[in-house]
Image 1 (tube, rainbow, N blue to C red):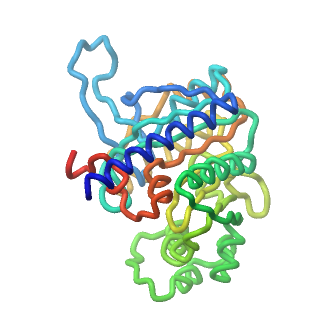
Image 2: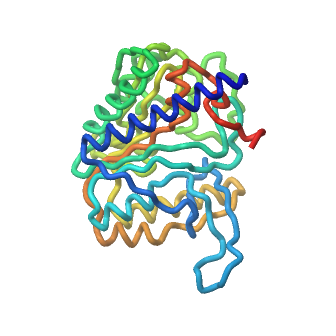
Image 3: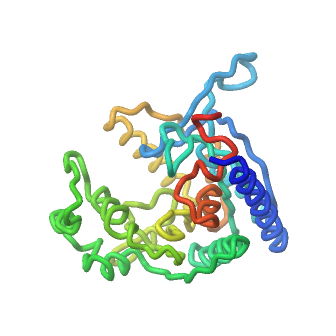
Length: 320
């Protein structure tokens, strides 16, 4: 990568940070800073965390610490304490992810809006993304789909009613080792291998109301079928953001953590300590809210029209 290109990317990042802070200041959303090291980790079986060991006095707390994969849990503790609308712009870490699309450390923007649901938050995310793209003189159209409508309109497959065999057929010529794959795996493969690659480069695509089995940290809305009040946002084929109408039920959240660790055991992965502080905060009461995480490097890539994350970093992992 040429030095001039690297410097240009750094200057663009600085402009983006200034835009983000101005965007939220105008809306009265408070910037916060939360710990990077935690005694709890991320139980998600699809995400691997880094961990380190504290060598100081034992009274300081648990010596085994996990580098955060997002700032979500401490921000939710602040929400439960009554802080109001907040955002954090900071570094996060994920083990085993490096290449053209991933770097083990990257910057995440996460924010929470009290009293909002995911549909209202979608509009704000689109507004911020469009403002960022405008810096780079990019204009895009915006298209919103429900998860079901997207599958039906692109593949003529109802993701809620189709059999597993029908989902496999819909993969067409995509060759996958089917051993150990469940229904959600087939749906994910259809999205990533058949649907997502066809997203137009000049479009922001928003997908909402996922299958209830893909709820992550979102609420489930009753219905036929029930759906997770969750959304994802793409610019072109790049996923930028993942948001939820947030789950506030401590019992259900604890059960989801346990299910995550059960899946980790099934896959031969180490269990991860559950965030007891978050569960305590939820029991005390977290307000109804919506939240979203947005990858800054992915946004910078969209602004520059790049498909290589290394082009928007001061130094990539191999050079760090």
